[in-house]
Length: 213
Image (cartoon, rainbow, N blue to C red; front, side, top):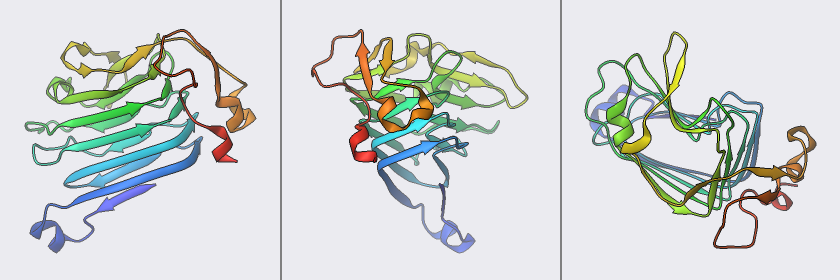
């Protein structure tokens, strides 16, 4: 899904827009990205009961958000299985003071695997200012033990994990998870059957596959 707004030069000059997009009960499989945002202004992206398997980032921002372009991402019962960052942000060399990026995740399974970060920051220089503008909240979400919180990717190739000590993180626990089946076996196979972290609820986090049939 490509989200372009505003589309006209006149509109761009007159208003700094805001927008909201919500995905509910969706499966994303084998795509380069779930939502590609080519937008200006404040954005809210919500995903509820969404399964992403063997796809690229769930959300892609085509530029570093400015101070007047706060980004809010709200995830509920989302499962990422494979090399799928939650957010990828492409930062140019002329990046000014960044806007806030707030991510709220409740009951999610973020099994992104080794070499992948929950945040993928693309740029020539390490985007440390943007990393400091990220705030992660929520409860009852699991991430892969071998995954990084944030990874810096250079446009010419190469990647490295970033020091995430500047990121405010709450409600996210590292844990091995066991799925009911293989990724190519349908939504039911992406229900988790075992995990190793204490959670507030006995119900398994992640997607509810019965709503994806």
